[in-house]
Image (cartoon, rainbow, N blue to C red; front, side):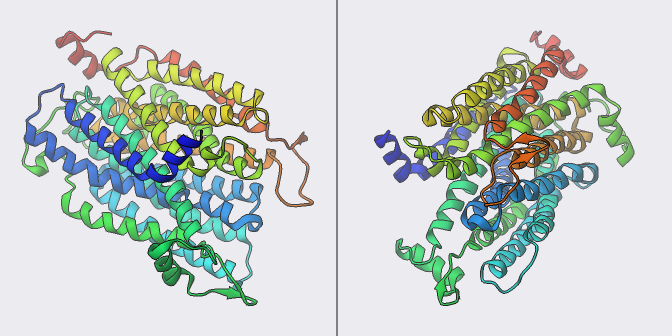
Length: 511
């Protein structure tokens, strides 16, 4: 364990860099439709800046989790759960507006709205944190953070639908499993930026800490010798400002490099054989786009799997970081110290596992690997409940395996299945509603788990809804949702878009 901790302490960035290189190599090696070398390379130039923008949007989303631990008693578990729940609920419902809008304006404009809006919202969160920590204002923290975090999450909601909208035009349905894996990798790398880079920012901006020239620069830019009653303050607000600046850098590259579809880059039309094949001339209103989801039993079932995965994906991502700080984890400190790195590596594995076996073993059917991953989560959450306080190392391993499975599910459902069945014309609306349901699941778990686990302040209520507050509710709350995910995935086991089924029959790739 000491050797592993040493490697993670000193080579985390190199490990993530190697993981990203591996993702890129796998992308270039996957060419089942025999595209030209220039098409493959130009498509890479298209998705890479788009994807990195999305990854840093994650840094500007989960930095709230990092700031919660840094702010200590200023925000309790229940208050944090409420703030996060409000933000994720806004994120989820925003897709009713943003999905049809991105289907109209295109993914490039959508990602620019996401990036610029989220950057400005993070700047406001940084200003609020500075005002609160320095004592310049007295305000209701739950209300203030909820409003600004909800604003951030509104703009964040443009991100996923925009990247998937662009993907729908550039990737054939037989390639989308691998792109789903890439999408999962981008989510996972973003989690690394949020938790590990964010944690490092917090560490480097602590009052009185030491850390070389970069530490001195951060202190000079963000701390400015801030004091209250003569006591130096930690410049926690930097965890919001720095992602804002990084996101704006990628905005510049997005404007320059991204094209909505191959035709815009000088290539011929690409028929992706999804649900829009033969229907590209049809004009769809916002009402028509929403009907593609809410009048479709299939899309609603895909969204239900998304909701279930959101419960246990963010149920782990959000709460292990809090649990490990509140409950000592002897022998397993490496999980807390490198939480973002573990989320990154295991998330990439989950995304590629689901995407690869979907395209290569199940003829681009997304439900079979979704069922396998849901079944895995059921077993892991039961083991978490059994060994919650007794075997910290095993608990940490169970948590990162749940993350692996849940990122795979998100990639398959929001990133791939919704696009396949929605088609290019409605992909932002369909994937947006599925991703929105994922975050509604996150809002559900955030509120309930936040109120079911023990608080940090003296005098907080010991019960919620008549139940004694206990950390065991954390894994137990996720089990029913994993069972729902498994049941629905089994029901959808054989489903494929008709155009894909015909393509598979023509190329002798039959289920």
